[in-house]
Length: 131
Image (cartoon, rainbow, N blue to C red; front, side, top):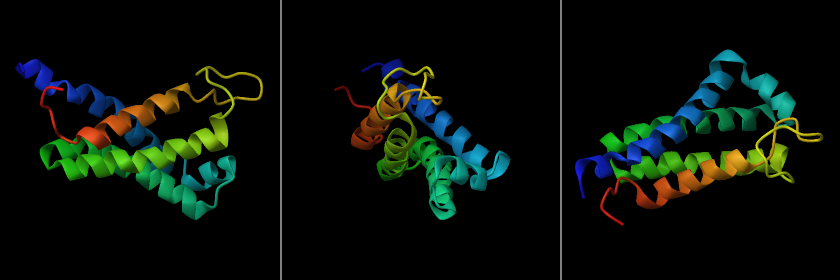
């Protein structure tokens, strides 16, 4: 396998990590976890867990490449329940990404893609060998 193919995993890592780091950081340090908790109808403790899973999961997915497969896998695993919860609380019943009547936050298309990317990293870890 050539060098470029061995580095392609970074495309998925960066895509997944950037989304989760942004959302986790935003909840923890910008918009605030209490507002998120209220808006989603979650206990504040659960909302803090969500924000920490987002930020921590994203960081671990990136850092895991420099450490070991277990770190990558833990980061990916942390993001999956967050997306399942997002689908269950806000996106279920509509596929399309764009907002619609009854779905001001859009459907579950994006969250499903994020779950699939996380599952890929969970399964592959840091293995860049040819499939």
